[in-house]
Image 1: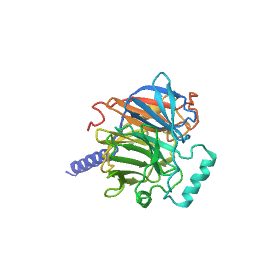
Image 2: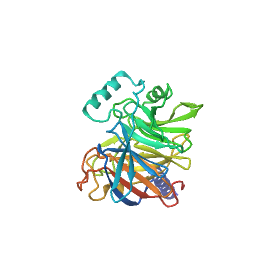
Image 3: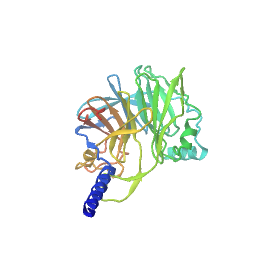
Image 4: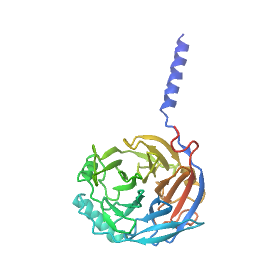
Length: 329
């Protein structure tokens, strides 16, 4: 009897341990890799599709976005615009001064990190340096969108937007142009949502969906015990679901658009670890995300660094959609 009880207890313990162990995400299949030519400043930091046009931004250039023409190597063609003076920032003085000093050294005072598009053809560009949104209309006229007064205050009270170069990193808007999500990059990372009400963007019931801290080992450096902050790289929206690009874990996750809760994830670590593709950084270089029913497109911001095979141009990775699609249980 005692032996039976002991064996039963051991079985229950093993079952509980297996249940507690995180399930490894399915690896996505890489269909193609394309270098991007013609981005003078390099650093492809945002990607979207607006109608039939592929659009991208660089965090080193303040006066243009790029139309990408597919090919063996994709060709970037600049579309210039003139951004008005940036609205007064609600970030603390010290954080603004660090940004100002950093911009003296590197190009890109506005630091565009993401781009999205609505069904009317409006393009939305996210300025990390100023926590601001620039709308560029189909005619090319650019204007800064007035954001809710409490946006930065709520984010900082939740532990986000506290560190230089760790502010807002991702943006996506729904096709109707009525809901807009933002991703705070790291330390802490989080998701924010805005709703359009009578022509103005507001925090309806609060701006913050989620906020979390934590450090993890990188799958790109399996022999290292070093840990790095969890981060968001970009956002995408498909079939009323929110998707996050999670650079450190090398994965794409589906999330509830109303709560930010994680539902399912898929990994692209195998593609990033393939021979010749590894970059020096342990947290990876994927910074831009776009999804459709057939697959996922990732844009790589190489920060002017060459990877193991010597390639130093910005890159696009095209992955096949998972079996059962992005909404599979």
